[in-house]
Length: 280
Image 1 (cartoon, rainbow, N blue to C red):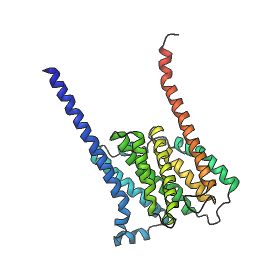
Image 2 (image 1 turned 60 degrees about the vertical axis):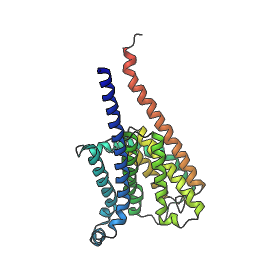
Image 3 (image 1 turned 135 degrees about the vertical axis):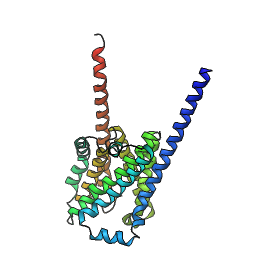
Image 4 (image 1 turned 180 degrees about the vertical axis):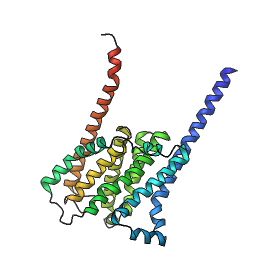
């Protein structure tokens, strides 16, 4: 009887856990859709558009990441009922920022060097555009796509890392089709652009997961890639040519190698105390 009762309890616990994972996934996807659509909805609200126009430039740049952070926070509070300050840890924002920035800078050095050798600095450089493309917009995208959606699907809903990374990555690439620059391309170039951006999205998710869910690693890798593209004349659109894509590949490979080294070093540090306890 005791054995049967224990089996029933285990079965109930398994069912509850399964249902909870489904709820987490559904809420995460729902919040994600709302966050993506919120710009369209708010653009039809007169008082909001008027307020946005009246704000200084830095405030307008901060509006999207702050809006998406608000939605992510609501999603996490609804499902996990955590304390507000825990939200930042759940998204990976409390991880060491210096490690993330250092990783992103070093990993994208091939892209920077290739641009330095083969490309000219853009004549129409604009500080506001640089901040937007390399910082605020990148932070917003990594926060929503990797920190929230990928993180919840993989870490909380139990999705396989590659299933979650590829799903979110393809979604990330496909949503760039609403970009006016991409819409002006031929269909073949649009497909190529989506494929390249989707691949980047998968890489950013993998980096986020392997760097112990450090959001700054993904933000930095994505941000520095955008920064070099914004500073140098590497192409007129995200599809680019052999210079842009070749340098992207080199930086992506270096990012993977650095991450694998980081993982190997971490495993070595974790096993070191155990080795010392073993008899010689």
